[in-house]
Length: 332
Image (spheres, rainbow, N blue to C red):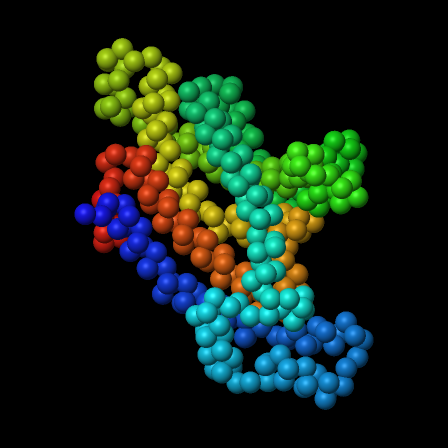
């Protein structure tokens, strides 16, 4: 007999197919409503272009075909895992995305790790010292972090920590002129990632801190907390083993659902810090009207979000023994 978790995972992955297909269809229709195309951008960069030349370019790119025929061709390409060709970058969309994907995954992983680690620590501290000066200080910090715009915070970090103090590089992923390899290259990437990762994590840090604090305070008078204390468990064990484990349940759910907003936030952060990831590539594709590339990025983002949400359900069941996965695709 198959393991219930494997059956659940298989069924949920099969459910991803129609969802991703619907998202791809919606993205295609929305981008068709946008004004201009890649030919207009190329003609503008060239300074001038005759109507005959522009018509010839559109014919070579397949942009002169009816919209329904372009949609059929696009869906046919997706069926063979072909994301098309970027006429602006002059290379296949899939190759271009895969070349930028590691940088974005690294930035998102670092930002999420920072937000979760500090959010849990500050949330527990605030709950344990509720209505005291640590709680008030944490509340003030999270309020500021929640309210400050991400792009402004990034610019101020560059001005202070890079331009004025010279502690960290202001942009890019590596120092190309240094020619680092091995551990030196990894250390250089880490130095370049500090500012964008911390900037991207700031908003989510505030959200997770407030979420953990609220969950911890709600659990303070729960029956199992009182039982643990009655059995002689110390406050550290009650806080970490009993209260915190249950407080992590809404945090796991929130973190999974915020992956999409984390990727959208990476667009601003990568643009500010010149980080060579998918967010910056998506921004450049919008400016260049490179819709094939933009469709590929949006499709990959949708797949990432849906797959992560599936694993969040599995993680939720692993954290909370009261939750089990079923082959119907729901948690009970």
